[in-house]
Image (cartoon, rainbow, N blue to C red; front, side, top):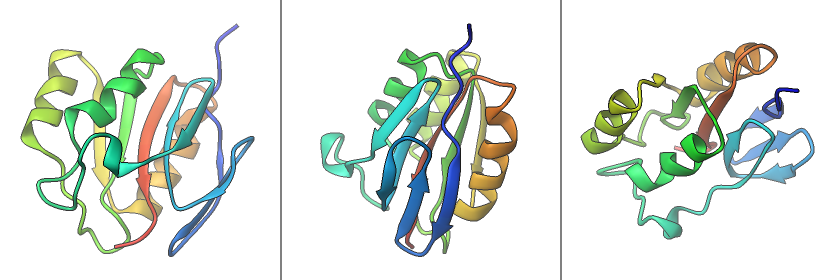
Length: 122
């Protein structure tokens, strides 16, 4: 049986609620689960943005589509190397404002092995 990605049941400035994971600010989600996204693990900052190491975990859990949120005010960037890695892996990727990213992710979660990185502030 395919492992479904957990749904995001609430998103607002600085707060997200994820099915089975509870409440937090930023999340890494993937088929079968997820966890809080700690930027310090990979050295992520708003610029240059989401690092290849941030998405590696999503790929390792079987994500075939990946949603990268840019924050509520589109401040979070994505390193070109991150997008290169996803292209090399043949993964479909969407980079969007957080509420749009959550909508797309939730719509895909029922039918697709989707992963995502979600930033709930700037």
